[in-house]
Image (cartoon, rainbow, N blue to C red):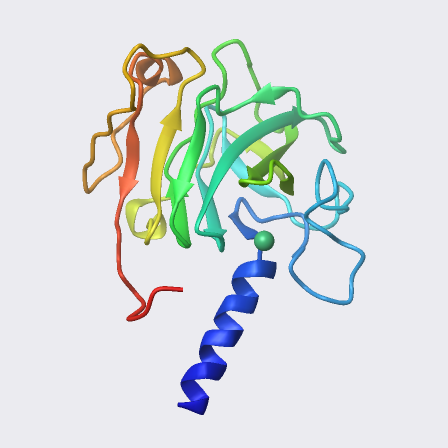
Length: 216
Ligand SMILES: [Cu+2]
């Protein structure tokens, strides 16, 4: 009983403090480590400057994203800024932002760049991931990338969603009282952002696994 109570206490403490991890593209730095001045509360990148070491090659049309989400649910916004040392993230990659429900791993196979944004082989940029919870305050992580014609989106076995359900929230008001959702075991192949814009809600990945015998 003591051991179970300790585990529960630790799990609860982690829920309150763990925020989220940006696994892919590789984040600028691990903002979850203690003993640093990093804090995910700090706009725009958790207090991590650009060119901190990690830089991932991303396909010219957009690439994959993997998040480790530690809260029961969160809204997610993904933005992009061009340049070698970015602090202004003025392109949104989520014109319909996401509602991610579940504490687990979210992999989105391919996030398309806006149609008007043309990048070249070798263009440097940074991806900013913002999560917002019920209090309205936001958490930030960034990843530095280089667009490469040779880069590819992650293959299916490298891109697994576990225990997270993703719903797109459109910015247009809907006449229906509640959003409808569709579910599938595989994310739909979205060939363009526009192809998703017409639907109220699209569930990109549905893989609910009840990993815990108890509810926290
Ligand atoms: Cu947190």
